[in-house]
Image (cartoon, rainbow, N blue to C red; front, side, top):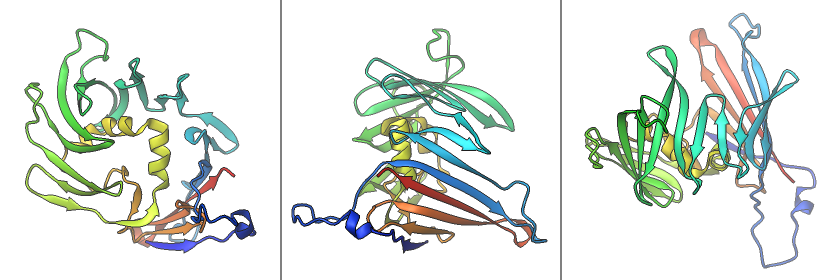
Length: 284
């Protein structure tokens, strides 16, 4: 990972202050939108027909719509409390305390796209049961296919495990350790460990998705990942970006703790590379 500073004309005047009360020059503005461009050049030098670009538009800092080829489509839907209720592949349901209690998700399993139903039971302020059902979450005849348990400390999942006999106890436990808002260690139930290190650069998508979904909702929806043993990354639930990201190049404004542009090169077959450029724009 490399990081560069991005200079804006007049930026010193814009953030100049004669007061010593607030010496920090950094701002934490909401994003207004971001663009994504995916480009692959084939071995013969011609552009891939699969190249694309789009703009994702935000509403009050939350994901809202996508503009592609001149057409804008709303993809995220909210209720009157601005709680997320639907995305293209997910429906979310809440109780009167605005806690997530049900979901329907389209998932690909064994090569087949199918709808999966979930119920979420908040057993206490620290413990949530995430139950996959064979019917809608309000159906009294729906049976539990399996249950996973998450234990929280504040916003963070600190323990997770399956509950195969539905006795409210984890069969085995994955444990999670955090520092400065980042997941730094996973101690898996099988005795193995995974450690993560971070740069000082803040993760734009963590901020964006926390605001869109809600911090607790994001974690509850990932219950199956928390109880698993295959952890290729940190789920993107940490405040900072991973330090070991050699294929990405970041451009950062000197007045923001978030990056402005991220360029990622992904090797494909026959020496061909894909370049994906994401650029964020900030509210003034």
